[in-house]
Image (cartoon, rainbow, N blue to C red; front, side, top):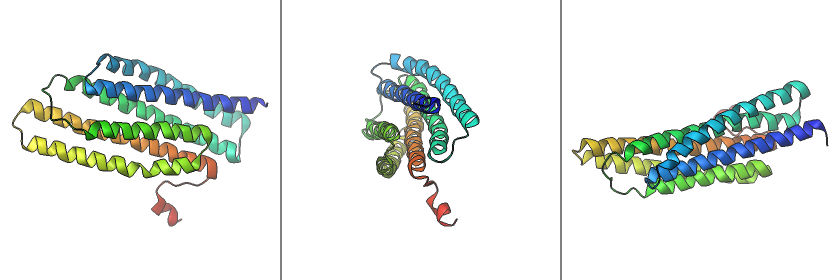
Length: 223
C-alpha cells in the first residue's frame, strides 16, 4: 500500500474517532438535560478538549496531504470534504457544550410542564449524526440523501417546542419559570443546529462521492 493511501486511511479513522467523541458528548448532554446526572455535564467539558485537539490534528493532516501530494479528483474531494466534516463535528461538540451549560442552570428553577418533543428532537438529531457518520465511513451517498430529508422533521419539532414554550410564558407570572422557558428555547435551537451540521456532513458526503454540490439548490440551478 502506498504511503499516501496509508495517510488517507489514517485521516478517515481520525475523523471517525472524532465523530465517536462528539456522539458521546451529545449523549452526555442529553442525560444532563434530563437532570438525571449532572456529572455528565462535566464529562461534556472534558470531551470538548479532546475534540478541539482532534480538530487541529485533522486539519493539519488534510493540509499536509494536499501540500505534499497534490491530489486530484476523488482524493482531493475526499480531503476537502474531510476538512469541512471536521469543522461540522467540532461545531456539534460546541452545541453539546451550550446545551450542557444551560442544563446546569435549569436545575435551579422549578419543574416546567413536561415537553415531550425535546427528547424526541434530541433523538432525531442524534440519529442524523450517527447515520451521517455511517454514510461517510461507507461512502454511501444514497444514505446521505435520505438523512437530508430528515432535517424538515427536526425543524417541525423545533417550531412546535417553541410554540409550546411561548404559550407557557404567556400564561405565567413566575420569573423563574419564564427564565427556564427561555433557556429551553435556546436549547431547542442548539439541538436544531446539531441537525443542521449533520445535514452539512451529508452534503459533503454527496460531493465527495459524486462531485456534486447540493448546497443551495436554487443558486446551483441558476449557474
